[in-house]
Length: 313
Image 1 (tube, rainbow, N blue to C red):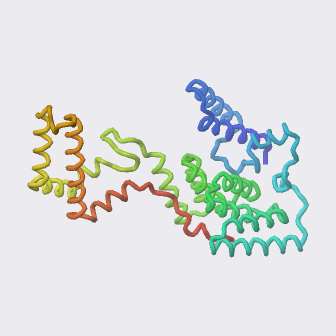
Image 2 (tube, helix red, strand yellow):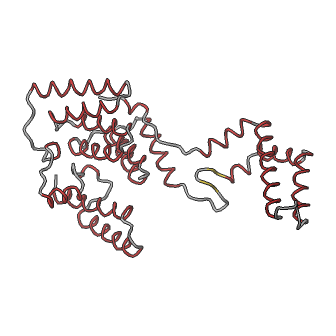
């Protein structure tokens, strides 16, 4: 593979990371965007060309060179001496044991076992991909991303590595990159329902934006207010004598500048409003618990699924 394109990809990847997390001014960000476009045009490379990824990121390579540290064996050039038959067999045994630990949710042990398998045979993409899954289960998504990059570098046609990369990136809220990796995973495995579902979720996260009519997170207030069940329930509640009494109390207190002795008019209004809100919520729950659960589910953020991707090889 063209090493110049690999280098260009590493630089573009670094610049993208700086755009997201570098804390740069708007002018500096605009300059980086222009630089990225120039590099992509000059070398025919984009950030979606994940098959060009190196085992290490550019900052990691630079740090190793600057400090004179020797790169770990599993991060060196893929052109290495093949493992002996004994090492290969032992690596497979360790991988199988790691898979068993994953089944019983002993993820720390699984990470250690996969790591030992990698030491014996660092050219096996499956070991890195399996360890990435274990890292994700432990919440170490950065470690999962790094292992997926290594797996892809070893085997650019390994669909599961792209899928697990997308899952880790989604967990890091890097949905643009996640979409690119899910698309690549689907190119290699078009019938995988998990990849299809996770791609839709990642694309939805990208499209999500505050609604001009008012929304909180993923909670769609417009949909709620136009829901026939909600409108009917609200109408019935407003005709309830108790609710009408509360509203009348709020209106009368707004015309009473003195209010309750020892309290301000604002405090009286807030107390009445809180009481009305509590009454309204209680009656909503009693009259239509299904609708309440539906509204709650809208407020829960959807997350990508690992499902059949949990299966280790």
